[in-house]
Image (tube, rainbow, N blue to C red):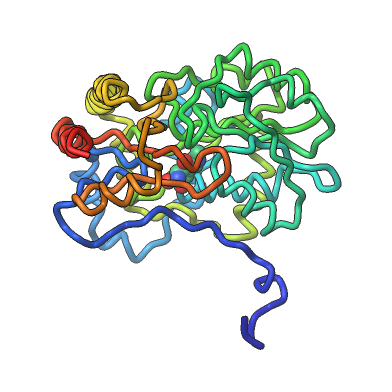
Length: 350
Ligand code: PMP
């Protein structure tokens, strides 16, 4: 704290992102990036954009990319909102679409940015416990609230809620915005985007950081009723009119134009996830069923934190959360076959 700080900053409890170690040759399975890398067409498109046009501001509306994403998801461009990663999209959602005076509902084990945004915007959050199988129970979301948000699949559990269950939450809250954060939807789940025309209170957010391997480019988006999108545009234009730079717009566009690469990456992650799950179970781990690009697994004998530390000493980084109920678990990002082999090999010797 310093005398120069605003009182608003004194009270902030910021999000702590996963570690990005500088050492080479690490088996980095801690922040749910895609091990297969972006499409070569993305690199080409970004290189082609490195020219004199960089002196000009980018399109503030990202119209061309919004059209592409809308076409891909069979919605209208005015139903798409772009942001600098889905974290920024979520920040604008918390500011622009959640009501004050009643709590925002989210699972008690979930993405830890949600309570941070509640703190930033001075809105109350209420954590709704997961059931004993670490699942979201839709019936628990039928209570007074200022808005609802949950990831599907949930993070860090990887557990997925069927669309009929998502609809129960939407139907219980016709006067509140329900946000489905689909950062991990492409690894086996079905997107709620196909419900947006039936539910004016539904907003779905997605990212290009995971299945499209572009965490470094920072592109995310939300899809919903044009009224919801208009509120988000108001917030955006009061904050940063140009969330996506020219390189990000070009790269994201190219990512959508290489469906074959996208499918290959998703299929690769899914098949490696099944293989890693079996191997971990063979080693005595309890592994929650996952539809994400990570697994959440509890070792039989060793404590979670000690195991994460032992792996780190072997150059393998996984994520451990020092939180009640999940402190015995490790969240392990699905790596390349070679990375997963390295992990399995190290665990076999422990
Ligand atoms: N939602 C969830 C559930 C996540 O795990 C993440 C990644 N940390 C994000 C959103 C944000 O992703 P990005 O800002 O890279 O789009």
